[in-house]
Length: 384
Figure 1 (cartoon, rainbow, N blue to C red):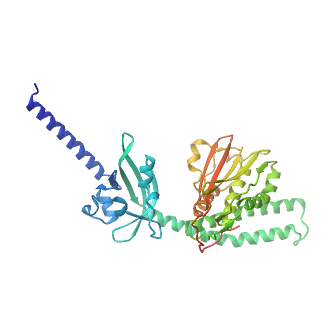
Figure 2: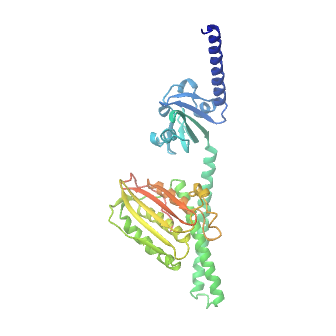
Figure 3: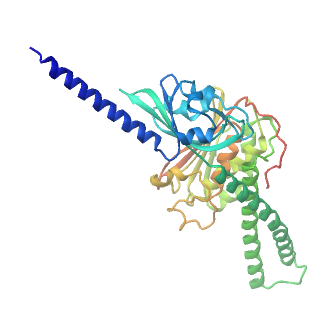
């Protein structure tokens, strides 16, 4: 027979233990150093620590039990609501793993708060039963980034004038306006021209990045024939291919025209192809393919070059990244090209990804929608 008193005591002890564990969990949640919000599987808020409440300007009773997406509003920098599918909490539920990203929250008083968010799904038997979101105020970081971009833009503009003057007078020397140059003097002058060309390219890249980051990139949508655009870029890069004895394979196919910004698309392909040429040894092979896949046009640029080390592939689209395996092999490079490419593709409502094996080669893909919802955007065009 069961000892009823003993059973009751065991149940009471178990209940106290559960209550203690719950209290510990609550204390741990409350003590998180950043804002923290927990939701159930329906997306209703069941916990929020004091930092989260302070950052968003709410009282606990105003948000506990409320539906998260309708209460904690996510917007872009201009205050336009972000679609539910693009919010980190939705991505975390769908992926079943933590998701981190920057976004903006609208506080109770209507002001916009830039935040760095990490959302982790709470899984039970591999099914999400809730989520925990941790976020922090990054207003100061955003302001510092803005100031850096403004400084880079200003400095780049100021550098262009003296660089143009150096280039003009160097070409005048080569053309004999200052008298006939000796072979050694011409060699020195050619070195100046090459170096100034690299400096000008760097300045233009910095200007382009500052325009994208500040939202001042000019977008001019138009119907575009992608294969024809690619033929133009390949023609421009043919001398570089011939210099390294490389083979480029491109067989144009009939594809529907798409609505995009043709000049920006050419900039993307020019950067990707230039990288493929630069980071593929002499006599190497480069292949460009373009296909229609559903409602997208997908471009692939493949090479059999140096590849990207597996441990570094997560930094591929970061500013100033250059692979450790190619720094010694190819001195020329700023590490800004891929960051610029990704920014342009995303501005065109596209996506970009890659696959690479060190010492075997790399393939980059980028997909552009057939009919992107692009509207003409005033600003500055990319620098040549």
